Image (tube, rainbow, N blue to C red; front, side, top):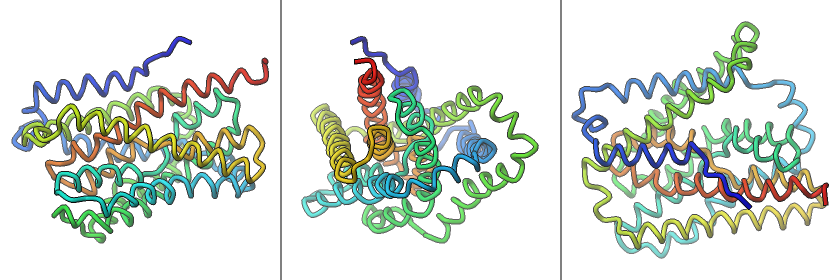
Length: 322
């Protein structure tokens, strides 16, 4: 089987390489207003998200409540509880930061575009995938900061719930609501140029990643992360993915889901959003120099989930042909 390497994953690797060799453009001392540009970009991303949000598909998806409950439980409860089980084992501050990065990954909502695309390829329940991926992002605005607020203070990072939720309201909720309100005027435009808007989303993610890693490289945060540590992170991410993937499969069968619903449960219940991760990291951790390490497990997970789910989706797609 020929494995295609996702172009966006390659772009992330290139951007990290640029931030390593040229961190001065994204450092705190830089004269380039990357923070302002990324903030405006975030506002536009969620405004366009509101323009594209389908009311009819969301309403249609409400009927399959068992599937939705499993996906959201997997996303916001099973993932965090698995990582939470390792909290008592922490002994050093370095281990605590790495654990916090994994917990941040675990507390994030599911991703929208890739979940729906993969479910479509695998011939799963597409309307349910659209519903779960969309509602997950909305739930995550509330749940992710609540989970992170339990532990982020331990890393001496300022964490003011009032300020954080105000930022989330201003940068995410208000643009989405505005997009929904203006959908009758510009919804057709957003759907027509969806591919270009997706390119804009990815460009903003890459910009945020560059800025985050530039600050971390400037502060020499990664000097404590060895090759062995990196391999450990990669293995840990793989184990986390397969545990949740297997658990959603097991529960789906116990609930007597058909194959289409099982595919949707497994694909949507194991995804984590890089878009929300990069946005939330900027809001939750502010100007912390450790933000690069915080994003590292998420980016590894993003690459792995695309690779593995792509292979599985292709396999599922041929099941009716055998």
